[in-house]
Length: 149
Image: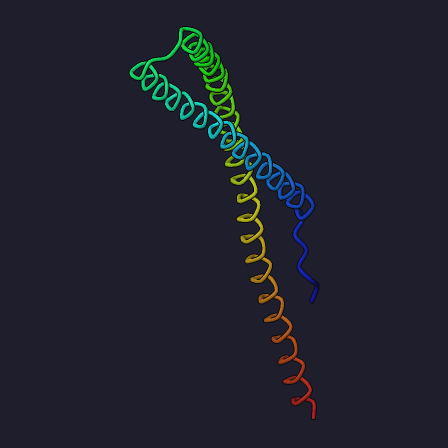
């Protein structure tokens, strides 16, 4: 009886490596998106806090220079928010692309797994068939030897 050897084992190995690399790339893109989204959240929170602080200062009274400084700082934060929002959009689209690629490579690998399972089942059936043939031959030989005696 010969050992089972799937004819596409090397292809499956390559597909598994592709799947693993795609998974790593997706996780990296996901982490990058989360980092940029967190930065955006932090900037939005900072803007909210600054506006709240600025309103309190207006009520209690502040100098014109202080108001200018707050306004310039607020404009700076708003520019950073706009830039970060663009980065979030890009990071999200990159993450979605990697997600689609991961799904594609996973499905492709799964097809090979299914083919291997099917091939292995047919291999087992063939081995059973060959074993039955051998048993038939052995019983025929045993019967023939018994008849000769």
